Image 1 (cartoon, rainbow, N blue to C red):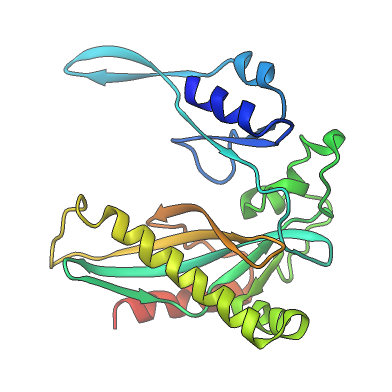
Image 2 (image 1 turned 90 degrees about the horizontal axis):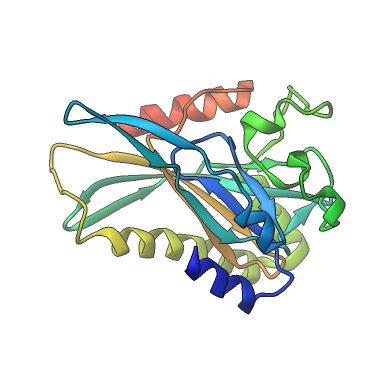
Length: 236
């Protein structure tokens, strides 16, 4: 908390996003712009059994500076889910699945403080957006990466679009190199990661999080086809 307070003072009037470290699908995520709101939060506790003894521990959160200038398509915020297969850390062997997708919010993006609690504006998680009144079950609020690449080329040019996707690959490689010395390397095992990446208005990619064993549940016909092919390619 002390480190966060120092950062908060450095970036005065910024928006911050808090995510419980042990939850998924957007559960428990909140946005804050005032320090006293963070201090007053009633952080939950959970009970675990350790050595036949009941232990109560505080729930931990990841706090990040909110990216308030995301690239928008049709005035809506989105992020990307990219699948990465690693079958060796030493040496590092990485496979990038080309058929990832974008996940869109249902409401138009705004930095209006009155909309700070509107999850349909700020959180791209499918589990959240599919509950919105404007949710379209036909396309599921998703766009494949080929459409995104075409959009970037048409609006920003081929070179800027290519650099953006090259930077995304660099984010993936550097994140894996960062943990390479501490990951247990078993030549009989592999891991498929789900990378969540967001692009800002300057076409710079930012890593949101990396999901181990990402969800392969489907919401649309196209989604089912994509993930079926993903599983097939993993085992080839």
